[in-house]
Length: 162
Image 1 (cartoon, rainbow, N blue to C red):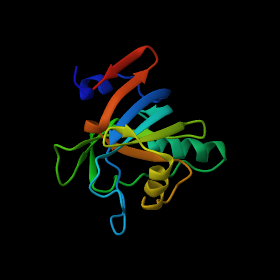
Image 2 (cartoon, rainbow, N blue to C red):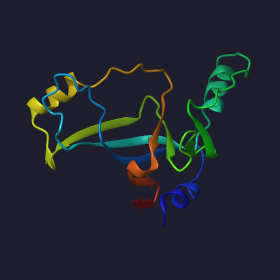
Image 3 (cartoon, one colour):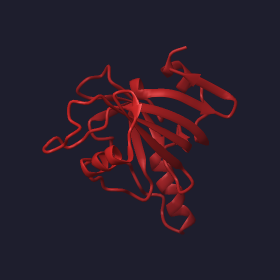
Image 4 (cartoon, rainbow, N blue to C red):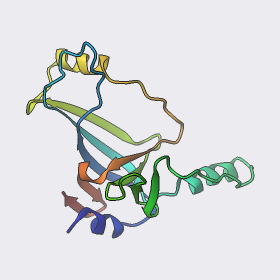
């Protein structure tokens, strides 16, 4: 079964999912002694939300706080929905698909790094940290990961490896 078919068969709006991705981390190049090495980042997400509408999440929070449900989410930058609220596609390259993940306070994320197929040493981890660009964090975090980077998804008793 391909990943799109599997994802579209999942229940919408469910937390407690597990997702594993493997990516090539974006690192600053200038002065980085690890440039030229085969570096992979394996990320384990647990208690992640899949099939969740960001707009509904914000409006539900506003409603609980006695505010009007008037939030309208902007279109994801550089992307359009292919299968709302699970899968996005790149506007520039429509064959590039993304899985939308939603984080909450109890979401756990753990990453490990491989360099040339071996677990990174503490010294190499410090170098990776030093050359990783800084990101802005938001209260309710959503990220879109390339479908090709998703290696495993688990929802309740359904599990698939890709």
